Length: 193
Image (cartoon, rainbow, N blue to C red; front, side, top):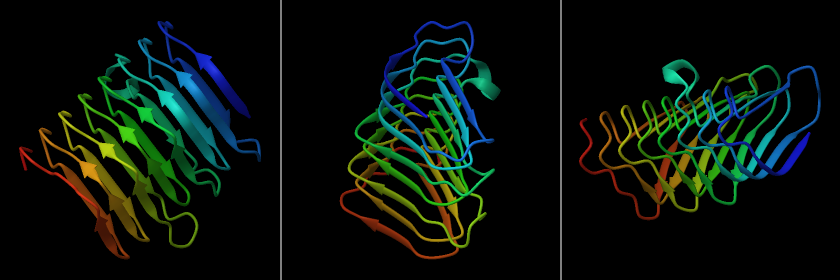
């Protein structure tokens, strides 16, 4: 399933929802804007990989349970969650980005600021051996009502160039049964914990 150059603004519910839990293919969403919708911006459940590139999902006021900028879930299968390009998830009622993966999670150039819960919540369910979480490029998680970045995995976590300032809880909470590696220039200032 591929969605390219697609905009949904001002929908009465979720901007875009894809359920691929009965399928075997990859879900790819690129060059999309899913903002100002009454529910979440974009939601995807898939047995296989979910790929986002150059996606904006901001200002979605759907409440704490349904107000994520992006809700991505591959826990029903074996898929990875991969974000490339530049992606923005700002000022949503709940998490900016919620990613629950059966395997690896990879983020590149993600901004998730001023959300009503987590800037980004990342969890690998351990459904496939050890799984890894990797953040590359420049990632910003500022001024969120809970943690800026929260990541859990049974593998390794590697982050580079993360800014997580001014959050109402921890700037970055990282838990891995493997190694945690922090590279580049990182800032964790003025958080409440």
